[in-house]
Every structure is written in C-alpha cells, then in structure tokens.
Amino acid sequence: MNKMIKKFLNQLKDLETGHIDLDELLSSDRDRAVYEKWIEVFNIMSPMDILQSLSTINNSIKMSKRDEIILLAYTKFFEQKMAMIGSLPKNITDMFGKEKKNEKKGSEYDGQMFG
Image 1 (cartoon, rainbow, N blue to C red):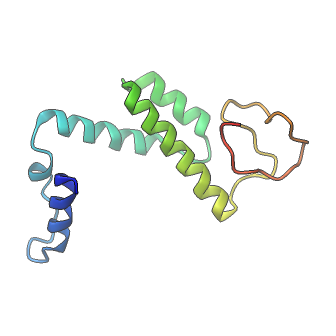
Image 2 (cartoon, rainbow, N blue to C red; image 1 turned 90 degrees about the vertical axis):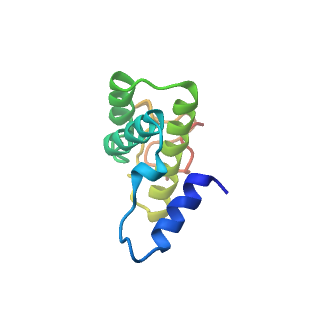
C-alpha cells in the first residue's frame, strides 16, 4: 500500500486527533506543490462544461504528460458518473464541441467521450 495513503488512513482512524496533518503526509515542497496543483485543477473542473474547464487548465496550469493523462482519466470519470446518474443532455456533443460522428441528432448519449 502507498505509504502516504496508509498514513492518511491511520490519521482518519485516529479519533483523538480529529484532523489530518498534511505536513506529515506531504513532507517535501514538491509533494505540497503537486497536491496544491491538483486541488486547483479539481476546483476548475466542471462536469457541465468540460471544454471550458480543460481550456482554462491548459492555459493556466503547467502540466507534465503524466498530469495530462491523469486529467483525461479524471475527465472520463466525470463523464461516466454523469451518464450513470442520467444528467447528460440528450443531444450531447463531444469534448471538442462538435456533434459525434455517426450519431443522428437527438440520439441517446452512448457514454463514450473519445469515439
């Protein structure tokens, strides 16, 4: 198990402290910077406006290739959760604002973001 996650779980189980000590979990400046970057990303992301969210993140936050892969996975997660709860519009467009190829107007959303 990841050591940070294990420490986090132990802090959650410890009822005496009643709080999470981020300094213990994020011991280096780099760890804190990564943590803060992803908090900012999560705050920007809006499942109802993926295109604008990704555009804002792309223009304002420096991301490595790995960060971009994680962000795309997070975007797919949003899409899947929204499809599960049925909150996606019936005439949805893909991430790039164009109607999905091979779909008729007004067709049901098939749960696929990338094709």
